[in-house]
Amino acid sequence: MSEQELIETPKRIYGERVGKSEKTLSHALGPKYAEYRKEWVRVSNREKVTEFPLYIQIEHSGKCNLRCKSCIHSIDSIREEYSKGFKPLDINLYKKILDEANEFSCPSMAFHNNDEPLLLKDLEERIKMASVKNIIDIIVTTNATLLDEKRADKLLRSGLTKINFSVDAYNRNDYSQIRCNGDFDTVLKNIIYFCDKRNKEGLDFPITRATCVLNKFTIDKMKKIKEFWEGIVDIVEFQNFQAIKNFTEWCRPSGAKIDQNFVCNGPWQQIVIRANGDVVPCCSFYGTEIIVGNIKNTSIYNIWNGKEMSNIRKELLKNNFEFSSACKKCSETFYIL
Image (cartoon, rainbow, N blue to C red; front, side):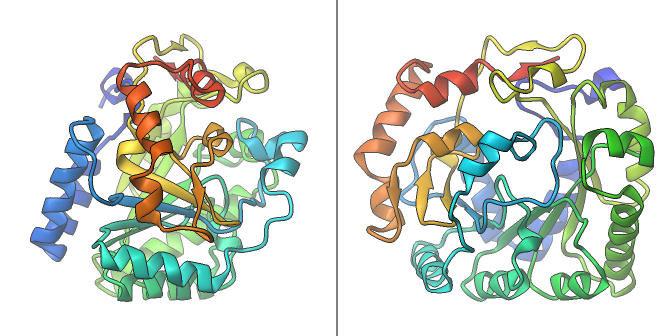
């Protein structure tokens, strides 16, 4: 596969995701999963607003143990404010989320946003709780630095359906330039153990994916990154670069330009619930500036169908990003090749 074939705009580069992941999940989970994916296409095209979000992301801590150069956690002033005073999401509040998700047959939940989920000591137990509540597609994105054998064994038996490894490199030198505080050898060892153990035990899940953000450090190494990781994980995926305005534009890849046809479909697809209960309408780090409610005080249903979310969708359908400083910054910092 040539580098040109790997490039897909405006949002993501899927590689071979549909082949392995969708076939395996559709076969194992049946009609419910197939219908969920059909609905996902509709909401991604902004054709309808579902009664309840199809996808809930939970940011259980808001914290990370790495300081990757293009991430908010590498910027002291932003990191300190981003999760100031946060403690892990209260377990009773989490149970409330699960009960409501179960009531409305929410099909998908992720245990990450702009944080490292393995910092949560009881992550595996929380995933099991979601599985028991009939969440059929359960996802974790991790930097894999804390994915030792003990935690890998627990995750493999937790009900997890997908795990994404944020790697951004195929060797120690490149990794150290990007993913500060991490150790490539440890990450590689952890991922290999996880994938080998799943395969040896004959498990279909979780589907494994290595993820790379296209930036100035990775753009010329796409082919090598793909060749290295595709022998270890199920899917290799590249993602286009988004800058943190006035901080990380220097990381953009050579030849990248601002997407002049930027479209946002986040508020049709999902909500993000933060560790303090705040609900925001998308997974962008800018989204935390738009708090549409707090689940301590109301329900996900009421927030999803509330005035704030409706107004956001109304403006975005007009491709008007000026109504919100957060949306404006997001639209101005998304780069495509």
